[in-house]
Image 1 (cartoon, rainbow, N blue to C red):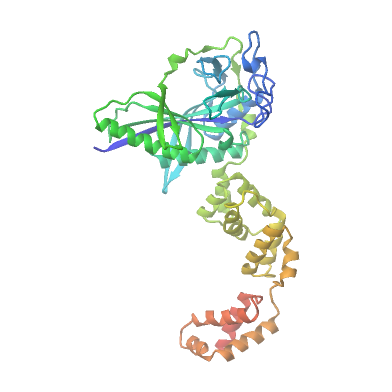
Image 2 (tube, rainbow, N blue to C red):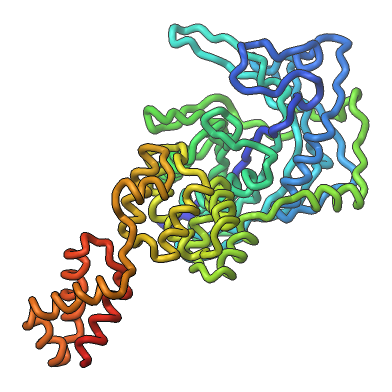
Length: 470
């Protein structure tokens, strides 16, 4: 029997505010454990929360970036459960009236575009972090407790691991452009829960779902989805029922493990937080937040295509905000988008695969590209200079002089080498005259060799054609 896989994602994204969601403690990753805590975020009796306005604005900004409607009235509830990393035994979250509803994220998988609907984006506080010492002991760092995060909940529109990764990549990239989060998965700023079920192909009846918690890398999400999909199909075909449960993904073993039976919303006994009033957001305030949205990847891609770049190249440039910012900055110094794009894609991005730090700032790269654009050095020489710039930090002009790579543009000198090539290789001349036009390529190569790569290849080719036609 064939099966369809049905996947919904819950993505938790910490917001890059200066302070926590309901108190004045610092929101700063990597500080000494339990150094950013207070009676409010630890839930001491009598401590009263105060809502962080910036966190609300950031959550609304995310909703607008993902085509959501923004509720003018929103409320906060207490989600009651007890875990060691949740010091007050409840989490301030949203259920009935979240900030953002009914958005979508457009993805592209293997050339096919698909909209993944969003059920909601709500604002809540993060829990603390359990640290296992590897010797059977566990300690808790409450610095993360109370950090503002948005939970982005999809509809069950995702059908494969490939679609899930495309969704997460698009989501992460778009959030990075807004500036509301650093989306560093390695630091826990972006985490993902996977809800998955399988059903007979074409059936309208959904299967029983499981939830895999706190996946913190795209690789883990991909592997976990494929594993759980296969596991559920095997269980069904062996005559067993799928149990609704919460699973923990063990990436080292490549398998999921049961944690507990899966709760539904009623199990959390949500009720309005008595210490927090409803929040009212006017349409004027929403419009003001929308005006602060930067240009987002899809719009930026269209802008790059209007510069004459291919759809593929424009897509590569907007994949990460750092690269698109770099491209834009280089263009403030040189008005040749195609040359800049080609160099960044083929040279800079190649280097960044092995080295996360860009060693050449935008102004220095523009200096190099201007030398190529003005035919003062060849593109081949430009690549050689680029490598040396990356290694040494020296400027393009300095290296061109040191390496003796300045292109030869003197017509008399080039003509002399052209005539020498014609004289030295009569067979190639005869081949050209007999209609074998590719023979001119060999002659161009000989001139470039004699000039040690310094001759302007366009001039060489033009002069060769002129001389051979005489």
